Length: 180
Image (cartoon, rainbow, N blue to C red; front, side, top):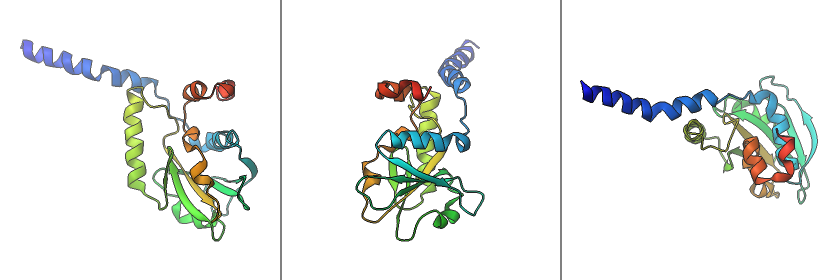
């Protein structure tokens, strides 16, 4: 009887931090906030927003075109769900001849890989429940298309798109008030 009671107490103590952290976790509606967060993260790195426009398919978020130094044509960024449901419509988002990439938490893929995105999301979700993830909006990935001779995708710190405001403040004190 005492061993069962001790086991129950042990299990309760083991899972208490997860339950407490789960209560603090507030899901972010990235469909509304993503364009602003993306624009801010990229303009802080020297990119200039040229235009934002919607495509014919209504299910796709807006395409954001950024002027990048060293590139003749703009870099195009579209926020996506990590399950990549929008992939069939993305041909309309990228200009002809552009190089297509998928970005999530700083990792870049040349082909859509829903399994890799889901595994990274799961990892960050577990870390977030324990209070150790610096990221928010973890259900959002990015579709990035760039001109063929432009290497801007590799130069950009994409993790800034997903950083929590407190992590961003600690890492970049000059933008402390802009994300809070």
